[in-house]
Length: 318
Image 1 (cartoon, one colour):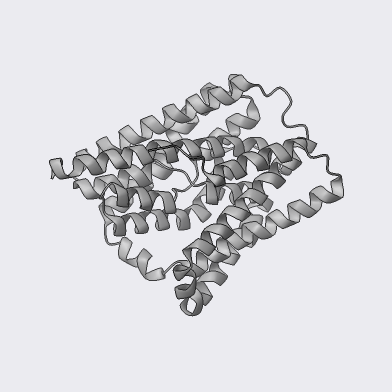
Image 2 (cartoon, rainbow, N blue to C red):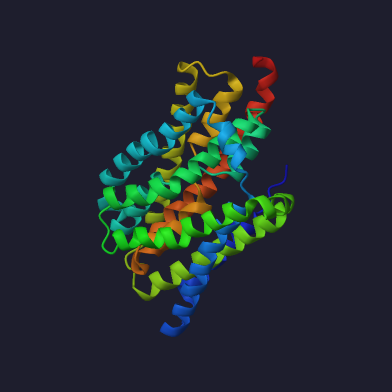
């Protein structure tokens, strides 16, 4: 198969470059910051409108699988992330190290996890439920864990209030109108993807723009980025191995174990960037989101290949 660059990945790279190089004044920066805040709300409003509450209720019935996915996402992942981040802070710098720790506290992905479970011939219905539950709980758990565990100037109870206003309130509004508009949004997945992707690109651009104005990139080298990439690869490898091994030890069947593998080893860019915008001061958001972007792209490439491999071996195993 010929490799083709992902337009969304190219868009993120372009947003990073523009945020680093465009000489915008303070007023223009405030305008883009406001636009980014609106985009944050739009992402979670649409998410609330398209999510069927019945899916979450059904998913709760598989207690063992859901418990293992949540344990991997919010216990095992943070332990691994903090071990790496704290040990390598002198080499990463405080901004990138905090971003690496923040990454470990994020919920799982939804779209890519479900897609890869489907490719690998896993339990798709359970994957939808696992990823959805992870993201709903993440709107509460991730901000709370950030405030408890990360020592960041400017991240306080005011940040938690911002999360409520920018994330939870739009999501709740979306859920309230979901019975009337949910079917339409679920039938227009392409439009949902465009809203998500456009919002993320604007959030990245605004965050990098503000970080550049605050001088957050001083001292950053190519070696720093390569170190972040290596750490992300090692962290992903550990979590993939751990989730697969734990699933076998827990007695999950192969289809459910694929769900644990794919949902328990990923972190959400779509949730992580809006949360970072709401939780952290503008001076540090830019450097914090870089590890999230790097890990997200790496997990897509690795798990896509892994899903195809699992699909090929599925018939032999069963």
